[in-house]
Image 1 (cartoon, rainbow over the protein chains, first blue to last red):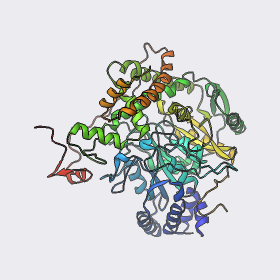
Image 2 (cartoon, helix red, strand yellow; image 1 turned 30 degrees about the vertical axis):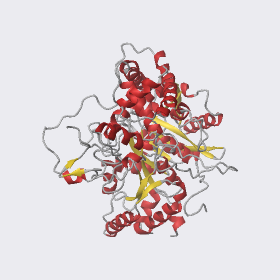
Image 3 (spheres, rainbow over the protein chains, first blue to last red; image 1 turned 120 degrees about the vertical axis):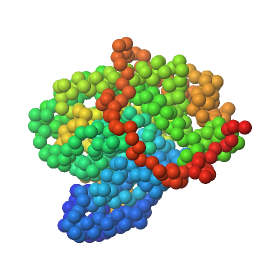
Image 4 (cartoon, rainbow over the protein chains, first blue to last red; image 1 turned 180 degrees about the horizontal axis):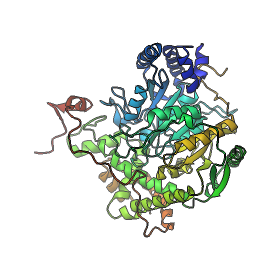
Length: 495
Length: 95
């Protein structure tokens, strides 16, 4: 098969092609290595690993030849550069991790390699996963492969998993890992026209994932189709004794959950999500989806999540508070950047001043303030109490419905620099995604339609550990939407 | 909640981030804007509501208090900006 034909396959198709020996893992990986080079102007990768990819592909080919194929044998994936990869530069998009080569492998990536997947490289992200536009990376912004029709300005891919989303959309990776603390898998998936799943908190181990806000960080899969993320999630999920918040529950066969049958399912539509700032086109897409699910036999139920508007402000206390504590480890002593000085105190201060970008500094300072004497109750505890109420909103909704249908983001991708620079304006991107992080619930974004030539996604939120319903409903939406559009740039060409 | 320059300087010293004098004013503005926006949380009645620290099960798993890993000094020191004779080294702190 030609390179463009190989790159056009989704994960499930590539898996079938490898099994039937229509092409080898080496051929598929070589095509993707070339695609990574071709997509370089997007800046989606910080560190491509082409030689390692070919070596992994050769090992997969040996197993395929012996008829001992592993579930992901020969599947080339990109890894968000927040996952530690043994011996491979891991940056978290930050200057402060300069030169860091982890001596260990994260649990999630270890599971992927044990399943036979091939590592194409490490993808760009907002610094320490703090951002919704992938513009805060020390390694420069990522460009979305989509452009507005008749407008050549580069657009953001969303964030923080912007490199992963752009790579998958541009066919420079077959699938990718991401992490989602406030929307960082789902919002870039929506902006780039791909599928992204934030699993239940505890479903995928956080061990070896550079921490941003530990109680909100969720590793998860990103891919071209719902089936692709179901396949990837199966390999990534599972209990890990090295993460004390990892859930000791069995991992179901997610692909088997994709039956297409949602008859009788009750789908909640939260009235508070119809907020004033939402683009009318997004509301139309949401209404269409409601209709699609009804036609498939599901029953839409209007629900109320009254605490919705308080999720973002609660998040912007809790996440920075946890970040200020997690990022205390970057002190110039054990790894990464060090700015020398004669005094230890000054060495810390100069290292952290030089190593952290503006958004990271802002969040560390907010978090330090919220945790400081005299303000802890007023900010941090207050936000945690509101978090309880948000989780209760979902709990009572799930007494009446099986899942919730919502928009993923209030807009499509915007141009780099189009935002005012007011941090709060950027934070509002996460208005529909943050609640599921606070409650720890599984949520997926699926491309629904184009808005002025750009993709927008819809979100399905489920009960804790019920990724199966989320995936099943998402696939029904995917079939009904039949979103076949391609971005302006794809590796191998659009034909 | 408006933060003044002195408060920002104090927070920055707690966070061990050196800020130049010229950075204090703009940061005070930005942080104050964020905190003003967060103030809306005060509209929510939360008396008697317990704080939620995590979505994970409340019971922390226990394991035997035994060594499960170790002996990796070289690997751990391998990323240190400075190390000597098996130790991390820092500027002198004791005269």
